[in-house]
Length: 103
Image (cartoon, rainbow, N blue to C red; front, side):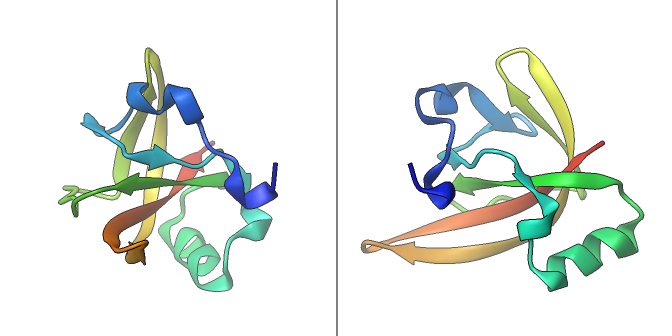
């Protein structure tokens, strides 16, 4: 499997971000693969993150703050919302949210 194709697969229906089910979710990745712009945002926030991941939704989300709760079944993790972008893939729009996993 290619490095960039890793995701939760069949566990995706059990994942939510601040109580909202995700469409897709990437596996945690070392922060060294994150772009310089986003690394700078994390550093400026003062949040300690060594890994990050992306969550995908079919509709844009209105998250109230930058600190969110990521949940897989009963496992909960605090994440920091780094940024978001709108993607157009195979004739459909998706909204991707990049989150730093808080240590």
